[in-house]
Length: 249
Image 1 (cartoon, one colour):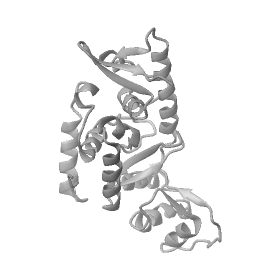
Image 2 (cartoon, helix red, strand yellow; image 1 turned 120 degrees about the horizontal axis):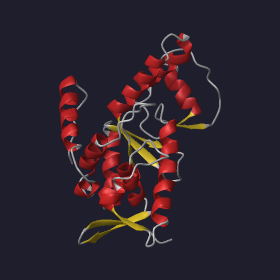
Image 3 (cartoon, one colour; image 1 turned 135 degrees about the vertical axis):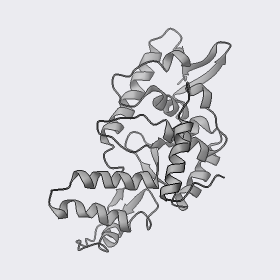
Image 4 (cartoon, one colour; image 1 turned 60 degrees about the horizontal axis):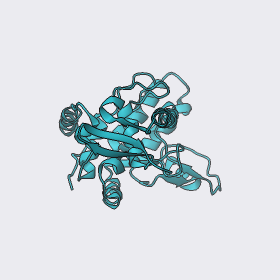
């Protein structure tokens, strides 16, 4: 399996150059199928929609990987390996029962820095917790959730915190992702509705990709990968190209 470069100015620049090249594709049909999870991750990261308002570092949905790497067991196995190697982090989303996002660790730490920068000028105690989290938590806790006591214990390494005896579980989240979560849900509904209104509940991929969504800041390609991987849509090859159909209930 491909080993991603470690965090360094040279390695980061090289990866960004590769990502830029990987993102130059004219159609989803050209790169819908991969045999390696790490390659799929890099391509999808490069193709993440460029959104200015409420910007967030690129993230990939696990369902999107399922749409492109047909062996789901392989995807899960390789994600676990990359997670343990601290190359990426997984996040449980509230957009669906089995929805998970994948983000490269460097991007996650950059997202935390972005939030801290926006909070400059406010009371120190209001944002210093992000610095403690960045320093003490990601390297120690690789799972998608953490218990209250464990979180307090890790954060106390950076400053004074209240040690509460509380069994509550917290899910790690990507800072500033709220509007994108709403877009994921609404974009799914919009595409399904669009196809369902057609006579055969289908559409050529080449035509569907040109549609602009009204309810989501994320592009059609992002949502199609998600919907195909989650089983809501299916693809069929026709002489004129790939057809996207609504899956039967």
